[in-house]
Amino acid sequence: MVKIRLQRHGRKGDPVYRIVVADSRWKRDGKVIQVLGYYNPKREMDFRLDLKAYNDWIQKGAQPTARVKAIVKLQMKKEVQQ
Image (tube, rainbow, N blue to C red; front, side, top):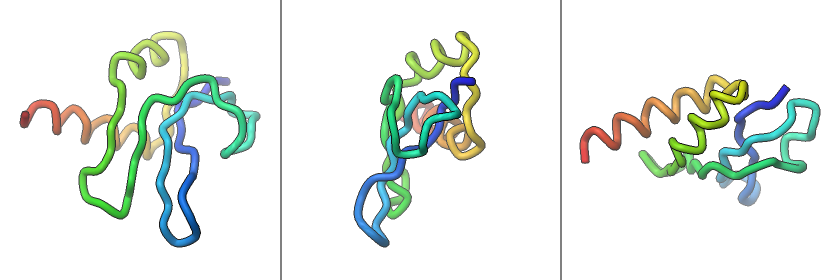
Protein backbone atom coordinates (compact mmCIF):
# COMPACT_ATOMS: atom_id res chain seq x y z
CA MET A 1 0.00 0.00 0.00
CA VAL A 2 1.25 3.46 -0.88
CA LYS A 3 1.11 6.06 1.90
CA ILE A 4 1.59 9.80 2.06
CA ARG A 5 3.48 10.36 5.30
CA LEU A 6 6.16 12.37 7.08
CA GLN A 7 9.86 11.60 6.83
CA ARG A 8 11.95 12.96 9.71
CA HIS A 9 15.00 15.12 9.10
CA GLY A 10 16.82 17.70 11.18
CA ARG A 11 18.89 17.24 14.28
CA LYS A 12 18.08 15.87 17.69
CA GLY A 13 15.45 18.02 19.39
CA ASP A 14 14.87 20.11 16.26
CA PRO A 15 12.86 18.00 13.81
CA VAL A 16 11.94 19.01 10.28
CA TYR A 17 9.77 16.73 8.17
CA ARG A 18 9.38 16.07 4.48
CA ILE A 19 5.95 15.09 3.21
CA VAL A 20 6.61 12.06 1.02
CA VAL A 21 4.93 9.29 -0.93
CA ALA A 22 6.32 5.90 0.07
CA ASP A 23 5.37 2.24 0.25
CA SER A 24 4.06 1.40 3.72
CA ARG A 25 6.53 -1.50 4.01
CA TRP A 26 9.55 0.78 3.64
CA LYS A 27 11.29 2.37 6.62
CA ARG A 28 10.07 5.78 7.76
CA ASP A 29 13.30 7.47 6.72
CA GLY A 30 14.07 5.09 3.84
CA LYS A 31 13.28 5.18 0.14
CA VAL A 32 10.57 7.45 -1.20
CA ILE A 33 8.64 7.62 -4.44
CA GLN A 34 8.17 11.39 -4.46
CA VAL A 35 8.67 14.36 -2.13
CA LEU A 36 5.55 16.53 -1.97
CA GLY A 37 6.64 19.22 0.49
CA TYR A 38 7.97 19.97 3.96
CA TYR A 39 6.69 20.69 7.48
CA ASN A 40 8.47 22.41 10.36
CA PRO A 41 6.55 21.92 13.64
CA LYS A 42 8.75 24.39 15.55
CA ARG A 43 7.49 27.34 13.52
CA GLU A 44 3.82 28.18 13.23
CA MET A 45 2.44 27.78 9.70
CA ASP A 46 5.83 26.80 8.27
CA PHE A 47 4.97 24.16 5.70
CA ARG A 48 4.55 23.75 1.98
CA LEU A 49 2.67 21.07 0.08
CA ASP A 50 2.18 20.55 -3.64
CA LEU A 51 -1.60 20.06 -3.63
CA LYS A 52 -1.75 19.10 -7.31
CA ALA A 53 0.68 16.23 -6.80
CA TYR A 54 -1.08 15.30 -3.54
CA ASN A 55 -4.44 15.05 -5.30
CA ASP A 56 -2.89 13.00 -8.12
CA TRP A 57 -1.60 10.46 -5.57
CA ILE A 58 -4.94 10.36 -3.75
CA GLN A 59 -6.65 9.53 -7.05
CA LYS A 60 -4.13 6.73 -7.59
CA GLY A 61 -5.09 5.23 -4.22
CA ALA A 62 -2.45 6.54 -1.83
CA GLN A 63 -3.55 6.81 1.81
CA PRO A 64 -2.49 9.92 3.80
CA THR A 65 -1.69 9.69 7.50
CA ALA A 66 -3.69 11.70 10.03
CA ARG A 67 -0.95 14.34 10.39
CA VAL A 68 -0.71 14.80 6.62
CA LYS A 69 -4.50 15.24 6.40
CA ALA A 70 -4.24 18.01 9.03
CA ILE A 71 -1.45 19.71 7.06
CA VAL A 72 -3.55 19.56 3.88
CA LYS A 73 -6.43 21.30 5.69
CA LEU A 74 -4.04 24.01 6.89
CA GLN A 75 -2.60 24.40 3.37
CA MET A 76 -6.08 24.89 1.89
CA LYS A 77 -6.95 27.40 4.62
CA LYS A 78 -3.67 29.23 3.99
CA GLU A 79 -4.36 29.49 0.25
CA VAL A 80 -7.88 30.84 0.82
CA GLN A 81 -6.52 33.62 3.06
CA GLN A 82 -4.04 34.81 0.41
